[in-house]
Amino acid sequence: MSFFPIFLKTKGQTALVVGAGEIALRKIRLLKNAGFRIKVVALDIDPAIPELLNEHDEVHNRAVIQNDTQGVQLVIAATENMDVNKDIYSWATDLNIPVNVVDQPELCTYITPAIVDRSPLVIAISSGGESPVLARQMRAKLEAFIPAGYGLLAGLLSQFRQKVKKTFPSIQTRRLFWEDVLESPVTEACLHGQDALAEKLLEEQIDAHSKEAHKPKGEVYVVGAGPGDPDLLTFRALRLMQKADVVLYDRLVSPALLELCRRDAERLYVGKARAHHAVPQDQINAKLVELAKQGKKVCRLKGGDPFIFGRGGEEIAELMAADIPFQVVPAVTAAAGCAAYAGIPLTHRDYAQSVSFVTGHLSEKSLPVEWARYVKPFHTLVIYMGKPKLRYTLESLVSAGMSPDMPIALVSKGTMPDQKVLEATVSTMADMVENTELEAPTLVIIGEVVKLRSSLNWFKKDEN
Ligand code: SAH
Image (cartoon, helix red, strand yellow):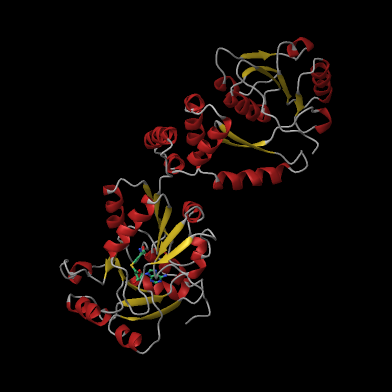
């Protein structure tokens, strides 16, 4: 390591920036955001610079002099004049003030890292000046991986620091307490932007810990796992899958997706077993509540999106009633995934201006689908769970006025490596399906847009 990372105090400190071009502007923006008072000295001043500053800062439109380094705590030189840069370096080092001459490592006593700012949490990344591009790439990765809510979390922890110190005088107890907090629903509430809830939960946790009757509080994550390709997971889905102690999953969740859950997590299958008995929904709801009450972090992993034919609404209603903290993670729904991987845009300027998602499988309580409502020009109809009643559905559509020649596609195991797509017309598809072995799940797409597949099929080009 040739540079030692430290964080400099900024409050009440002045940074001198010599030069006021584009690079200086970027540096000034950083220093100002960090909280420094700024002193700029330059011959030419970019008009954007004074706009960044306020009455506490200073701008001098002239050549820099030795005296400028008096009373400042940090120096950045961004001038193109080599002699001036050297002067600044020697004036600053004489006074033991950290100095950085942009792009001239031999004239630097410090270097500036790439920053991921989740204030008060700040991550600084450096390649020791060897490869700034690599450091910036690493920053981009961390930016994507660390939710913006970490700032809120760090702020909340700092807000409660004194109170926790008073409540738990021993360092050891305090450490355990904070570790517990970071593993608790407080963290999820913050990452989710629910600051008032996070504060309330943290208060409760202080109370519970101080009474020593405390038991970790469980929570539930209702997570959409997408249509099958693990690459289509969201960052949040993956994070929560790796955090949960127990995972409840059903038939639509592929083994490749389950692989991504925490290795030692308990896995409970709640879909249809070989005997075709699915665990009834009310038992799943009750199980979620029971596990969370035991203090577990429970991931309810569902195919596609939880709120599209996923009964996610029923599950969270039960959690709300039982006052269990939870969150819902949206995902790529089968219609979006299958359409994209089959090369069928669901809408298209020339062929479809609207799209409907309809279920072919109704609960006993619902009215039969009024298929006539979906027979209209420039429209795409996507039917979930449509295979068992396909013949009846297609006949109903034709009786309601749909052309028997309307193109239709049936996508089996959409987005997965063994995806299969059948293409036909609404009058021929039912026969074709009866004569073809198709694995569940399958999705039906009806509309002129299906024709586009002949030119847009990109995913499995060799498929006919
Ligand atoms: N919540 C899910 C849908 C659950 S209903 C979502 O948003 O996608 C189950 C139906 O979804 C299946 O019967 C099938 O019609 C469809 N489906 C889900 N995943 C699919 C896939 N990978 N390929 C084809 N159809 C799929």
